[in-house]
Length: 398
Image (cartoon, rainbow, N blue to C red):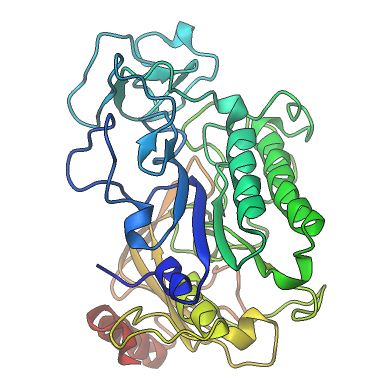
C-alpha cells in the first residue's frame, strides 16, 4: 500500500524493471511456488521482474519471472520450508562429502548444485539454478530489458548477486583476481556492470541515462561459506579506514559506495562529502522527472538532487542508520550509537558493547570511530538522543 520509487517513476511514463537479487519479501503468507507468486514487484510499481527470490544462499533456488518460477515442471512441484524439515534428501550438515563448496556457519540445510543453503526445498529439479551461470543469466535479462525499452524512458533496478555468498563465479573468472572466490566474484560483478554500460553505449543512450552504482551494506569476509575470503585478503582493507562492516552500526557497515555517471550533468572524477541516503532516492528521482510525492508518503525521503549531481548543496542534516540489531544516528559531523551491542570486524566478528547512554563519535576528526566522546560531550549526546526518539516516532519531524 505504500508509494514506491518505481510507482512514482511509472507515473512519469517510465517502464520499470527489476532484475536480480530480491530480499524484500514475496507473497502474502505461505507461498505456493507452483502458481503465481503474488504480491511481488509488479504490485508495488515494477512492470517487469526477473528475480532471485531471496538470496543465493537461501531456498528456493529458482528464478522467478513475472510471478512464475522459470522452467517450472507441474509434475515436480516445489515446496519450501524455513521451519520444519521437508523431504528425505541429505543436508549439507549431514553429508559434507556431497558438497563442492563447504559451509562455515548457518548454511547447512538443502543441497542444490553441490552447495547447501539456508532453508529446506523439495522438487523443482528442472528449475533449479546453476550458481556458476547466475551472473550471465541475470545480466542477459537486464541487457534484454534495455534493448526492449531503449526507445522510451525506462528505469532498471539491477541487483547483482555478487559478491553475496555463496561466491561461485563462472569458470572464466576463477583465478582472475588472485584473491580467491570473493575477489573473483568482484571481478565478475565488474563484468556484469560493464555489460550494461556497453549496452547503453551501443544503443546511443549514454548521455540520456543516469547510472547509479551503490551497495546495500558494507563489506563482509566469511559470511557462511569456506571461500578463503579471510585467508586471501592480504593487505587489502575492504572497508578502508572505516570501522567494521556488514551488520554493524559503525561506518564500515552503513557507509557504502555511491558512484554516479551522467555525462553532461555530473562532472567526471569529482567527489562529494555531503550526507545522502538511499532513502532519498524516491524524492530525489521523482523531483528529477517532475513528479510530486503525495502528502504523507515517503516521509523520510528528502529531495537531494544537487548532492546527487555533485552540485553545491547542504546535503542532509541528519540520517538514521539501520544495522543488524538496531539504529544509529548521524547529525552533521556527529555519530550516535545508542546503548546496546553492535557487531565489529568483517567476519568472524567480535561484539562492541555500548553501555549507559551509548557512544558518540566526531567523524570530522575520527572517521574510524575509535574515540568515544559520550562522557565529554553530554550536550551533543542529549540532543542526539532526543532527535532519534522524535524521528522514530515521526520521520518527517525534523
